Image (cartoon, rainbow, N blue to C red; front, side, top):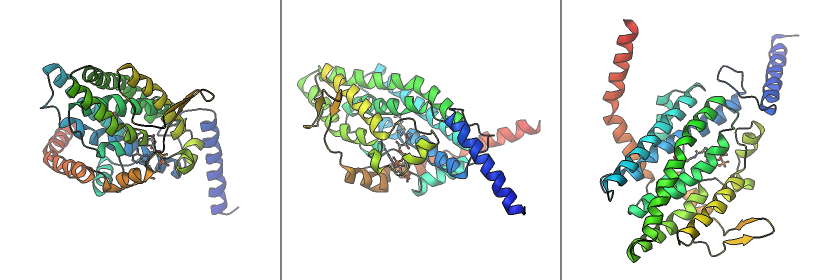
Length: 317
Ligand code: 3HC
């Protein structure tokens, strides 16, 4: 047997062992052998997840100085700080796959990497901060609870930690919406307007419909995803429609209707043209988000340099 045949046979044995581990529901650790396609798929998904957490700090950060009370400001500050931490967990989990933080940041800033569509919309008033917490974090919880069972162990561990904080994020947003919905007519109108603007982009967060999702086949084969984009979207809709009813807000979908047979809500058509425009850089705030990230990344270089100098100094002592 020549060298190439031996290597192929070895590779096939490793692949078979990997597939068996994944099918058995075993977690894949960084030191385990994995197919290059699995590694690349995870790098794309986890880095884009991390980018989303960090970019997501911007729309909320705009409202820290305009929060309507000290309590509201404290809650918003805590939430934004959490999101930064979620980004760090996820960047660290992604680095275990052999990509550097610098490479990931370069991919984000150059537009090679995506981040969640939802963060390219403007937060126009305080009701938007409520809608972001209630809907965006609500959607993220549905997606991330499922990802706790992802096959890549560092990603799963990051999800377990992140999910512990997401419910606070969703509750504080829902509280803002509940307060405003039962407030003055102007406040109630603002809450309904925010729901109208954030509802459909929140549904888009779960990705294309199952039949149009080019990544899902591999994601399922390798148990990176445990539920489909549409299954998770449906779970979010069914839960959130009831929450809207409780606070007297109306979901902006004339086709929304309870389907007794399927025991879930039927809903209207999602505007995938808008989705594709937004995820390909043509949303309301894409340029602003990346320009801001570039500016503060440069301004913050001194922090990274100081931390590196300290690490080297303590390492050599
Ligand atoms: N925003 C931007 N791009 C999206 C997207 C979205 N909502 N949904 C899908 N896409 C992109 C995918 O990245 C892929 O493009 P690429 O091949 O260039 O990367 C393409 O559209 C095809 O979509 P697929 O469904 O085939 O891709 P995936 O199987 O990766 O599914 C996903 C997309 C559902 C977002 C999946 O990647 C996922 O579950 N990611 C982890 C969760 C995540 O990233 N959440 C982002 C929000 S984090 C957040 O909300 C923070 C919270 O604290 C507020």
